[in-house]
Image 1: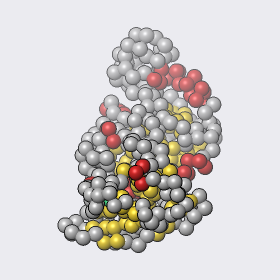
Image 2 (image 1 turned 135 degrees about the horizontal axis):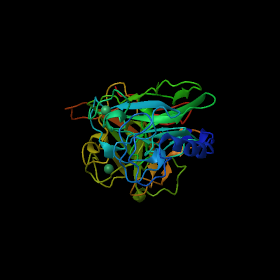
Image 3 (image 1 turned 60 degrees about the vertical axis):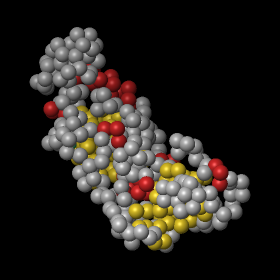
Image 4 (image 1 turned 45 degrees about the vertical axis):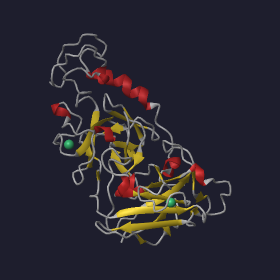
Length: 352
Ligand SMILES: [Ca+2]
Ligand SMILES: [Ca+2]
C-alpha cells in the first residue's frame, strides 16, 4: 500500500443525481438552453450572451460563465497557494479532487464517489471578470482557484477532498494534499442556504535547500523477491514530490557514485527544475518527513512495476539508504530510516 490507497476506502454513490442537475439547470437561461443563436440577456442581469451555441449551463459563449448565481446553486470555493515557490503554470495541472465529479465547462459539482473529472484550478481572476477563480481573487498571483457550483441540496451534503497536480482536463493526478494536511479535507453544503462556502485550501510549503539522495543496494535487498532482476531497474516515489515514480540510475552519473555496481541512486536535486522530471518540486527543508516507496521494474513512463513492500509489514528497509546534503556541502549524510507503524506503513526519514 502507499499514500494513494485511501481511494479504496471511498464509497461510491450519488451518480444518479447527475441527471437531476442537468435537467433543472436548463432553466438558468432565458432561451431554455437550446436556441442555436442566443443573443439574450441572462436573468441575473449579467453580460449579454452572444455565443453561437447556447446549451444551458454548459454554454461557453463569450460573456457567459455558467449558471446564473441565483439559479439554485451555492458557490463552493477552493484555492491552492503557490506564492511561496511560484513554480506552477497551467500545464502543472493543479486540481481539486474529492468525493465529487466536476464539469469543467459549467463548473457544476455533483457528489459522487471520487469520480473524475475533477476541478481544474486557474489563476485567471474571478468568474465575475471572465476567469474561473472565486470572487475577490487576483489573476496571475500564483494562487490557483476555482469557484464551483453545487445545486442546493434538499438535505445537508458533506464532501471530502484533497488536491492533485499533473491533472489534464480534470484527470486524476499526483496527490499533493498530504504536504500540509494528514487527512482529507471536508466541507458541507447545507440545505436552505445561499452563502458561498470557502473550503479550506492548500498552501504549498516553501521549498528548502537540502538535497535528498535515495540509494538501493540490489545485492542486499529483501530475499522475498528472488526473481527481481536489477537489470529491470528501480524507481522511487515520495510524498516529497507528489508520489510520481522517478527512475533510479546506476550509471555513475546524476548523483550515482559508481556505474554498474548494483547500487541504484536517485538524487532529488538532479530531478527538479524546468525541463526536469519534477518541474514543480524543490529541495527539502529541515523537519520535512518525506515518505517513500521503491518500485521494482517500473515502465519507462513510471507506471507499473512492483512496490518494494510487504503486504503484512510494509516497506522493506533492507538495502535502503537515504542521505541528505546541505546547500553548498560536498558530503552526503546518512539519516535514520523509519517506517510508519500504522496506515500505509511507508518508509520515511526526518530531514535534519
Ligand atoms: Ca489567482
Ligand atoms: Ca551505482
